[in-house]
Amino acid sequence: IVDSKYIIVGSVKNNETKYIKNTNKDYSIMYISEFRNYPKENFRSVAQKFIVDCLSDYCNYNNKKLCIALSANRPEKKSRLNIDDELKFFNQKENKFHFERISSFELANKSELCICLSSNLGVELIARKIKVLFLPILELYDNSLKYPYFRDDNSPILFCGLDREVIFKKIDYLLSIDDNTWQNIIKDKSYNFTYDENNTILKEHIDTTLKYN
Image (cartoon, rainbow, N blue to C red; front, side):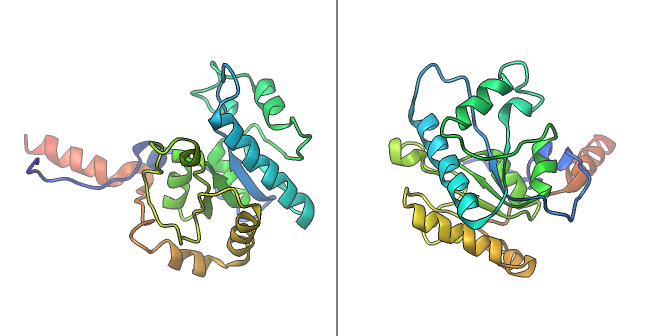
């Protein structure tokens, strides 16, 4: 047990990431890719293909637009991932989706709902009050991969299962609610993640500490 003072500042990277807010929504759903150069098929690749297949079918059935925030498009991943390999990975069943060469934050801001497997970006977007649905089905393949951020099987923003009907109903609900209803959902302490634009709390704390030391 460490007896100390602490401050909650949220994700330093998220707080410092800037983008132009866009009120126009070009896409109904954005999937947050967790693509990696898998040496062979594994449960992580199977889980992602399942989710994107579901989302592609949902959008086809309901005349919605799906986009994917590609891992290979992120600055820290560009040197390690090939965008053509990633597109081929998600398009094995001729899934219909769009992508743009912009940051994941910007693409999320152009989407009504973001969906992820277990990406940290999902939590960072919730901190920014953006709609997110979590589908942490990796734990179905490996029980040690319990989703670390929150755990509530009855949550409207989380489902850990392979039932497509339940997934579609969760999407229907989150797309149908207005911003006020969404804000009320994430007021719950389980989802109340901190977003401090420009890291003002941390910077002020550092300035004060340096001033008196």
